[in-house]
Amino acid sequence: MSKALLQIDELEVFYGNAQAIQGISLKVEQGELLSLIGSNGAGKSTLFKAICGMVQPRSGSIWLNGHDTKGLAPARITERGVAMVPEGRRLFRSLTVEENLILGGYVGRPGPWTLKKVYEVFPILQERRGYPATSLSGGQQQMVAIGRALMSNPELLLLDELSLGLAPVVIKDIYELLPRILGEGMATILVEQDVTRAMRVCDHLVCMLEGKISLSGHSDAFTHEQISAAYFGT
Ligand code: ATP
Image (cartoon, rainbow, N blue to C red; front, side, top):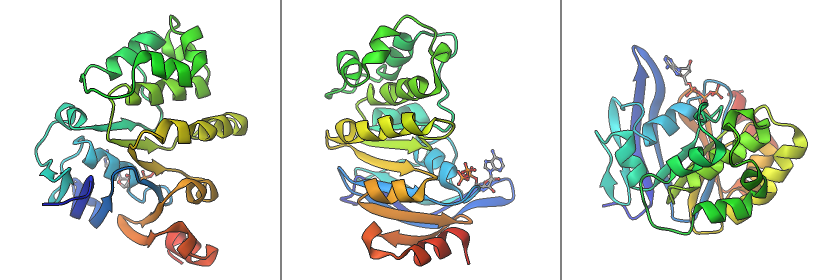
């Protein structure tokens, strides 16, 4: 039985005949922040979808707290403590900010994150609580997506391209809030296109290339040349 919070062994995921994940193995310990980098199509989002039960692996296994998640529906995996902030946010368009947040808490997992605490971290969301979520600015919508994920009190938070489409000043604000958000012992996998930023915040850096892990270790352990070679496959 695995002692890591998340353990992935020899994972293979296909879309039809096309293989998106080719034998990936990795571990995430409690409280660890792992940055996942890689060019478009490397398989990062597919890996997240497999962890969340949104795509079924053809082979290999994903263990959460020592339990195999094989065959579990996404809602059951959320109940076991995994939450994702998906690329593009995917907010419920017809619902208000507050309704989106409340829905995130439907699993009823106990923990530090409540509506009150989300509003403490993102006061602008309290001001906009009655607005349709999709009427907010891109940065504020990202805060709703993060808040909605936190409301399930996850043990593992998957953040997919937090900064996509946001102005640099908004990205800076969100990253400044990260330590406060993650300071509750939650483990995190962060997909980030900005490699420098990804390296700055993480404990462990993983680079994917064409469905495989091309580099893995402490971010200080690699030169820019090594990272560039792992990223571009040169
Ligand atoms: P990006 O940064 O562009 O989101 P990514 O690293 O997240 O890239 P994935 O989206 O996981 O990569 O894609 C991995 C591979 O799987 C790519 O070749 C992609 O074209 C393919 N793929 C992804 N989703 C599907 C799908 N629903 N059907 C078929 N192929 C898919």
